[in-house]
Length: 376
Figure 1 (cartoon, helix red, strand yellow):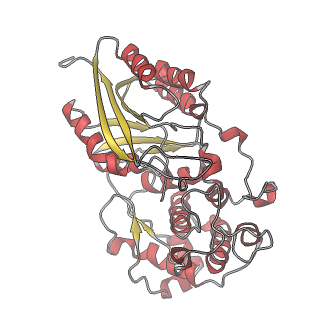
Figure 2 (cartoon, rainbow, N blue to C red; figure 1 turned 180 degrees about the horizontal axis):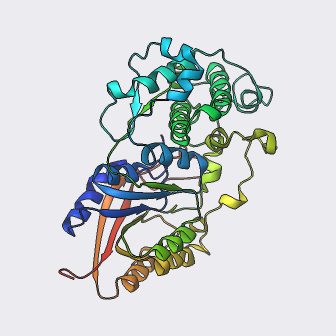
Figure 3 (cartoon, one colour; figure 1 turned 30 degrees about the vertical axis):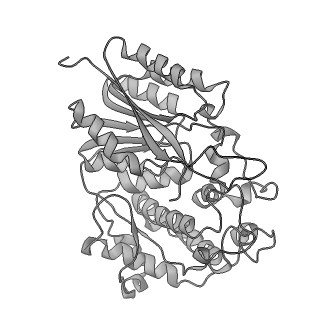
């Protein structure tokens, strides 16, 4: 996904920091998981992973990448819909960190091919968000929106024949595919007036690269501080990775269309304004408020019972670098405290204009480590 704050390019630095402190396994909590990139890394590296995010589209990714053991067989679904096995799996684009899918993904690719073959339909989602729809919005090209309508309805209709993991894998595939075909400059705060070339590509469902590494991985959709308290009640854990939102842009607004695809709940709300926003008061993050961010950080750190804590942030965050250092120094309490500054390509939600002037193309990414004294 084209995601604000994705840490894909930071994975090598995270791995190196863990290695320097001889952290090679145990439990790993990715508290603000987003696309689950860091959570996937931790699973592949042998950790038992807990991932969390308030957004439903993120939870679908977490459930697909963490709560499955390899590629599902869809046994019940294939019995009920025998035409699936007549589909040619072929090769198709993949996403995720695990090795490229092989023969084990055959059942999944057949299901995806069958879904693509269903007649596209112009229903409520199409008319609300897509080119040619009655609302006049163009987040997706006409054919993409109509295919999404059909596929998403079918996933709900198939629920009695799918395990939770199978449903999550198919939903994650649809979300990834729709994001790659979105007719936006980046996030879903606006759509382009004309459908761009990349948004006109054929509707081809991507295959998630799934892992069978380890067991006992868990995905949550909770407030971060609440989950840290819940984990603390279980005992002391090993690694806590914090990558909270750093500016005022709320994720529930930036990715509201993907959230609607994940929840498939258009019947329960009226999209608001030109962009068709969904209600999201219960998904607002305190880390996106200058008045509340310090307290939000402090509450998570105070409740955390982890041997090692890693924090990603940057120099344009709402919490000043000195204030963040002070919070982490207090948490270290005489233990190890390591700090790295890394150049990182700036995310641009739009071009320079009268309402916004970006300060160059680079920000400084902070990566902190808090842990026990060497040898402790």
